[in-house]
Image (cartoon, rainbow, N blue to C red; front, side, top):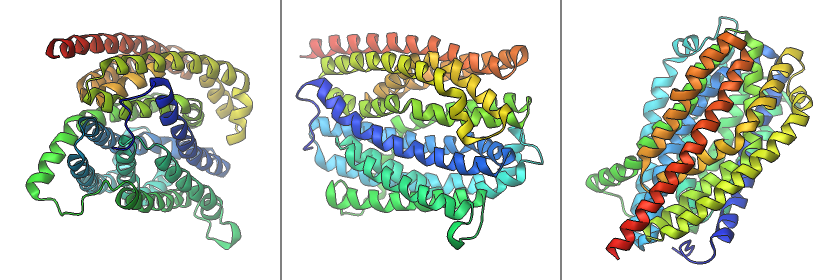
Length: 450
């Protein structure tokens, strides 16, 4: 309640929300890049195995993201309305919902490792490495999902610094543990891919403890009363009204990437490894855009709840301009450093060449991809998840997969990368137009009711 985003200049609010998120996301992406570096030194087969796990890991991570979006939306709007008791109830029950979801999906995942990854195109030479990683990772999924939801609750109150510190501590823990557990440094057992998964689980456990302590003692967002079944269910309903469509929209992307990975698998393990490597570099290049999109959640939610639609329109306009400028900058930088950058992570010249082609082609669409991310986040914060899921479905299922299939047949991996760029451009600018029309309609509604 003390971090009121409904007053004061819009730009400085967005900067204050976004800068800590940039650092937090940098730490999170560094987390993945360090994993990629050490696993890449084990060999192309191990790197390909991790690339195959990426869509599944991202799917369940996006389940947590969706629940976090629902949590941010309902809490931010409750703050905008001035109802602190409702804020505490939503925060407490968001964590119980996350825990319930974790138990369900981890149980399913452990029993479907082989058939799932065989369907994604993993061959008998890659599958044993995938089993090593995923058996450990599934057991630690609770440490991924619950702190992500907890950090979303903290951000909804306008505090993006503390979640960033928590993510930084988790990343630092992982960076220290990777060489110890993957390579067996300093007398530790050499666990290779199992070590990468175990380092991730331990680091996430640290973030879980930190998030719970902050929610309880610093932000005072957790209720001290045990919620009734009836209260729990209506809180879950309100969170899931936004969270389920947001989770579905979020999971469309990694599931679609899984389909695209199967297209790449036809062209060999090096194609999959190069794609996985380039995807992680891309995550680093888009860090500022991801941070801005995350910051839109609390800002738009609080102002939408307070009926300050003009401030929402202003925030979106500034966000779109930033996305276009940042996308252009990253396209230029990656065009210059793509090949030497890829060579840092894997010495295989075929992997380097494929990763470099991706990083030369796809970044031309980063500005439009950023507009898509910002628009989707804004719609969820408004409590309007359906436009977000339509945008994501159009992007991945309507454009990317069909174009990638055609591109794979015509031009191999380069055709797939071209499909990604075209899909970003088409849907990104369409999302921009939709958000403008929505804000204009809401402005008329507020004016009529006032």
